[in-house]
Amino acid sequence: MLREIVRMLPSAVTVQDEQGEFVLVNDAAAAQFNTAPDSFLAHSESSDFLKQALSHRRVTALNLIESGRTAVFEERVNSELDKRVFLTTHRPVTIGERTLLLSTASDVSRQKQIEEELFRRAYYDELTDLPTRRVIEKHVGDLIAEDTACPEGGYGHFALAFLDIDNFKHINDYYGHSTGDGLLLQFAKRIGLELRPTDMLSRISGDEFLLLLNPIQSQQEVADYLERLVQRLRAPFFIEDSEVFATASIGVSLYPEHGRTYDILHQNADIAMYQVKNDTKGAAVFFNAGMESEALARMATEQALRLAILDKRFCCAFQPKVDIRTKEIQGIEALVRLRDDKGVIQAPGAFINLAVELGLIDELTHLVLAEIMKSIDLIDEAFGPGATISINVAAKQAGNAEFMRSFARALEDTGCPTRFMVEVTEDAFVAKTHFQDDILPMLRMIGVGVSIDDFGVGYSSLSALADITADEIKIDRSFITDIHKRPRSQGILRAIESLSEALGMKVIAEGVETFEELAYLQAATKIRYAQGYYFSKPIFLEELQPQPQSNSDVRMALDTRPSDSARPAYSRAGGRGY
Image (cartoon, rainbow, N blue to C red; front, side, top):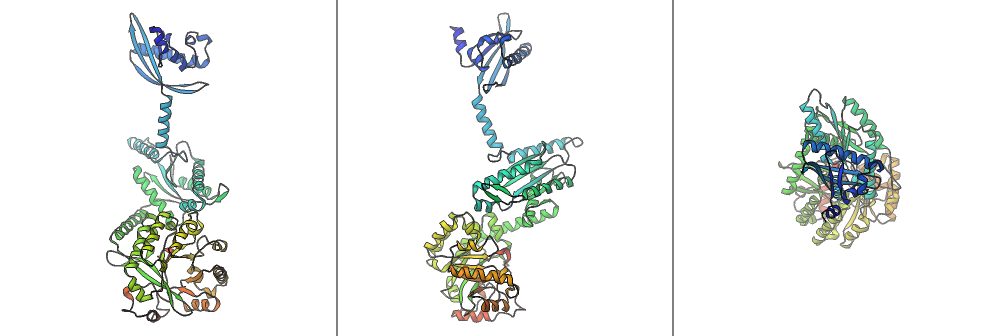
């Protein structure tokens, strides 16, 4: 009975003698090696796989019996049939006058599969199969620790490069997330083409990669490699029948010149990468000390912006949209301004792009609407109760259904939603953000108008314009500047004007600064409306004449503007009329 119980135990059991020969093998142990118990005794007739396994077991038995110690091993059985993992315990025992090795094994293959899957999820990116941030962080930390412990014979110099795909959010919105994932995969493959076994590439977040080049001989060696990489990344990517052009901005820090810890090296490479983003994009630069001071200034601006939003230190200026035939004010555009802690007004170029980048623009847009409604009576007195009020919405916001629903509710709650015009750039229409199909009807339902801002400098084409449903189109000032001297711009202006007229959209010329520009618009086009410093700079409510009684009073105030030579140059910092 005991022999049968041992034979049928679910755990593998073997017993070996002092020479390593098997004296007992149960069925589970034989199954571990895909053979029958008798095969453990008939070595000459065994397969090569079994012979090798038994030879290894005999060596193990002799060593453990001699030392008298217990050992636990993880055994991997890779036969022609399958691959399994066993956790085996070997224990020398004395029975009578004989010393034997008692071994038991359990199949942990499934457990190991789960552990390996959890390991990959924790340490390898699911999409690209690249190591994650914690892997490269530990590897760099180990390199630094070994170099520090052995300064004369350590690893020496290496480079850490921070790569960020340019305009990845727009690519995702325009082509869809499937194409975005395909782009990430192809990016990873191109970056890894020339890597050595000692280098490492890691995907550390959505569109950000970290590249370790180890070892390096000189900065020039790294510069030459990165130049080849930049050129390689500029070639088009072919993804799902689409030809996608994308580049990466790359910042590089060197060890030990730019830092002696992973955190400092990573931070400095990040700072250098943002320098590229702010300048040219699609290039690689090395960190230098001057970049650090710029980064600190940017952090100070970010902190000030967050505090300003918390303290509601924003105000609005208003720039009229004028009928150039009658000089009647048809509407106004609300332009957000920031008062710093000293009361100085900051132009939007200093904070709007940062607000978009930090995800603060949604709250800022709601603050603008609140500021308008708080002063609506004074606005009506100054510009007339019939003047439309335009509010700028960034393209990123326009494609965000959750934000647009909340903003539409806020406009409806004003009690006068039909007075408002939402200004968005044309890329909000052409990107795959469902603005035109889903969000535009929501605005139409409550009577809010839609204006295409800065038309002509984004992703516009006349065919795209034909598919857009909007109330007005604002031609970017780059087409209006010196329009009377530029025949090519005149032809483009006529084409946009004609198509807009056919589609029933009002056309507004932005950035009119001189009498010559106005005279051309009046004489050579059918454009009725314009906006710019020729008519008025952005006006704070406190700057208006006290208690104007009518729209004509405001026109009289505007007509007292300084001469062209004394008037300040028109500026739209940041590229948008926020």
